[in-house]
Image (cartoon, rainbow, N blue to C red; front, side, top):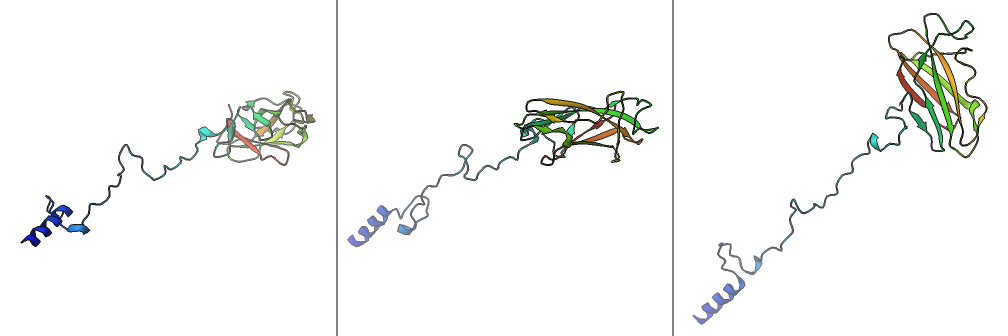
Length: 197
């Protein structure tokens, strides 16, 4: 009897008789407490990064399609900036070269600012245009709105140059104009697009 009471006492001290009826002896020890994730406890999984949006772009840089609106400025890393104004219709003079009857004559102002530390050769500036149907617009040379040879000479650091370019837009369904400007060989072309008023 003493031996039985002794065994029962040891089992009771070891927690073999619990109120929830699990039983189990020494091998059924309670599991260590593990912190659980809750609304106030941050989870261990990293938060995914949100991809950058167009709001993070530098103002004046091309959109995802690589096209700027007329009046916007293209800025290059070396400090050179280019702006193309919205197109204006005009009536070519009798001395104009490049205009055909039935075509729409327009001009755009191209402004180049040299924010770099070196002289910029404007003779390397190329300006071209296409209509809304993708057809090439012919350059117009005229004395009326001073449509000469465009940007020429050298542009010193910190200075700007402005020149008008005339284009003969073929007749078509769309009254849109795309203008491409390329400055030198090391800078990519910049594109502007909009409607012809």
